[in-house]
Image 1 (cartoon, helix red, strand yellow):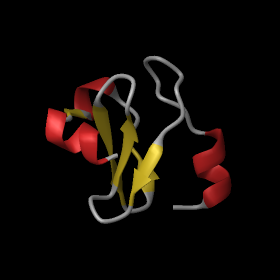
Image 2 (cartoon, rainbow, N blue to C red; image 1 turned 90 degrees about the vertical axis):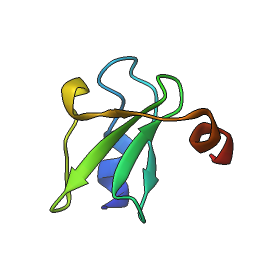
Image 3 (spheres, helix red, strand yellow; image 1 turned 180 degrees about the vertical axis):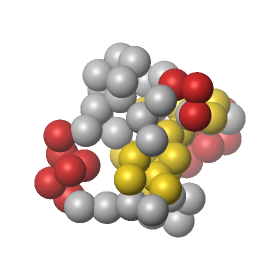
Image 4 (cartoon, rainbow, N blue to C red; image 1 turned 135 degrees about the vertical axis):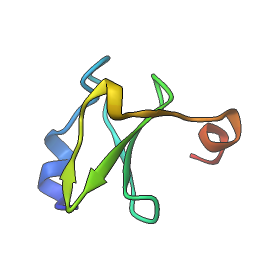
Length: 61
C-alpha cells in the first residue's frame, strides 16, 4: 500500500483515518470497527464489502 494513498484515504462512513493491516490486506477503521479489504493493491471502500471487527481485534490495534 502506497503511503501517500494511505494518508489521503479515510473511512467512507465516518471520515476517520484508516490503519493498514498488511498481513490481512485490510484497511481498518477503529471508530466504526470495520475492516475494508484491499484486493490487488486496490482498497475496496464499500460498506457492504467491509467486515465487522471483534472486540479482541480492536483491542490489538
